[in-house]
Length: 557
Image (cartoon, rainbow, N blue to C red; front, side):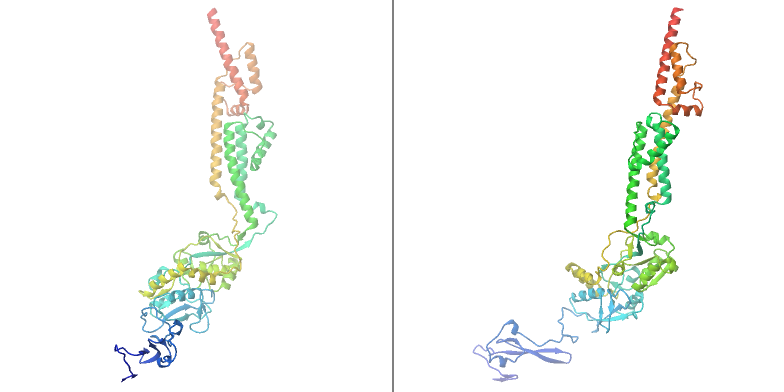
């Protein structure tokens, strides 16, 4: 039987004998033959009539068809439904800037765009369940940084469909564009120049400020005087000629710095003050040693900027990346005058401005995002990050408001993160060990009184408290001593001995009958406590003897 396509044969069961079909690729206004199918050979690009003359071959490698042209004139196999963009590729704006080409680098040709941000975008696009053809549009002439807010504004005005690059997700941008989730953290940090410390013959004075040295020396002498006062009446090592006592005060004071004092303290108040003072000395010695070691070994901050508060409080000029949101943040959030801000576009401008410093028309520090700073520091080893990251922004891809691509790309970025590909792309573009890691630290700052005033105040208050207790005890003993003195000189031999002893303690001085003058109190405080106790004991004994004698006289009468 002859049919429309040629000879047609049926078997006894009324089935076609050797059925075969042509496979057509229909597209546009026509179609094209891409292969054949038959139950004898399966899919093939050769005619079934030719294959019938050969042994059957149904292996997988023999199953072939010509390339299929899919809608949009592409041979890429679709992954699902088509993104509705009227058949036009996605217009993706990328900043063309003169520096930090590790992030976005624009070559010759419209699609010759590479870099860290671009690679992440392309990797995320490939994970979408539908094809999204993209056309990169460079913005900027490459000689200076374009304004990033203007690029986001083009998305809002439908001049662009998306923006890819180091775009920080900040409040004013989220009002006009839809961002994906951040693909990298990019908080703001401060970069300042550093220098190696220059040692000199007087380096051992540098750990403390002049004010700190003066207060510390004064406190050493003050504690020495306090301990001498507390120990003078009861400790023979703190007595002697005036010259010896002055030398003892100074020797005891400064020998405690090395815990080498040889004088023993015997009074409870003296030991209490000494324990507190030795703790203070331990803190001072440890701080001095640590600060001196830092000064001699680590790098010093050249401008004295140690963090955000220090930078804001100063009046020094500050560099910032031109075209980015950093300028608005410094002015609006930190209230820094615009006159202090210096726009910088390239890595070379960063380095030159920092090296010149404020005195030569440069800047004291540069504020930029962490990834850019890491790239800058990888090739400029004489600068360092000071302080902590003081914002928590991130970089994301921007799309038009309510675009489904923002949510789908966020999911794709999560997949990249979970698979480890996000980190691999980061290491490929942003890891450069040119300078190496320097963990020696920064800025060995001279220690001032502000770090120790609480400790010094506590020590001084304890010393004053000990003196108050000591003088209260002296006054009490002097009162008892004065009240124990007999009203008149006794005539017996025991009284004569007592009088001689008192005269030896205080020669040629009148005996007080009540609290005497301040001079007599000082003389009493200068007398050994042991001798005072002996005198008081004799006086009490004399009183008892006189009382007994008077009782006998009355009995005899």
